[in-house]
Length: 374
Ligand SMILES: *Cc1c(COP(=O)(O)O)cnc(C)c1O
Image (cartoon, rainbow, N blue to C red; front, side, top):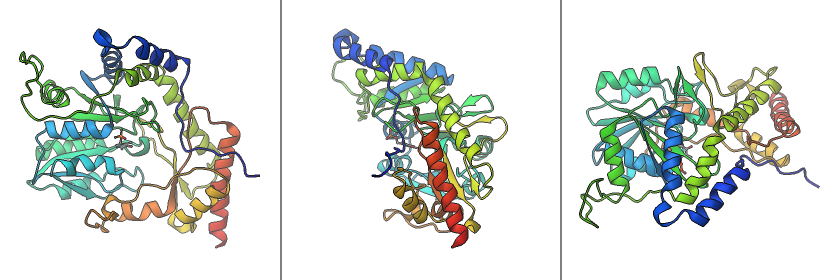
């Protein structure tokens, strides 16, 4: 018989989430249909230390509206790292703009600010900083670049709940931030997202866009001022979100403890690099990731095979987006094209046990030994 399955991630849902959701289902209608939504937006904004938050149906929707509110459209370019999930690039394409994929740094696996600088053109309308797996982008360098070239820096912080850059939370640093509450993320509403900003005008534009183009204060009924979007979160989802935000400290602490537990178990193996935490930062540790030295002889395929044998649902490191069929290849993005071939995402969830951590670490250790023999 095979060993019990270790999933890649799993939400932590307690009696609190169930109670709020049940209340929303029973009572959150009519006059109260936005009650939990407003409460969730306020609580999340307070957690981040930002002025405004707009709950959405997804992070993709939050990005789409934020980029639209910046006026990004056909002919424009948005710079982002080649190493990413498609959700960060899709809204750029939907707006008729062009995603410009640049290389990542070898240690943080996030956008290389120097590569971003080389990619700036007169058509560049934004730099999208995606904090990969909880690792922080070099925000100081990106903000300085944005300042020099007059280009806003925006954040996809879907993977960076709990990450802090010199006292400021990921997602609160750029012109706007976008979050995901998909079931695999650190806090979840099943599906869901959040747009956040300190910019009052941008917030107003996103509110209008998010309400089918109806501006606040428009007195005529059914009278949109422009064609907008419909990316709203439901009150029942927001109720779950309220409970998750109340527990956010506990949820992030467990994520960090799991990353630390992996690090401890693998400390004697210098050929394996994991998510960094530079001085002055906190890594929210959404997704512990192991990257093997090129010299270790360990491939993604060997890792996938070894984890499948052990009944562990480890996931591959993101493929370079420019390697997908709908984009032009940019093989010059050396790190983005090279690292995924010798890396793997490790399981992490609130209720993970010590023996499960042992099993996962054991697979990495064995893969390293097998690579050395090959
Ligand atoms: C999960 C994720 C998204 C997409 O979030 P959705 O809520 O599914 O739209 C976007 N960007 C990053 C970096 C993500 O990890």
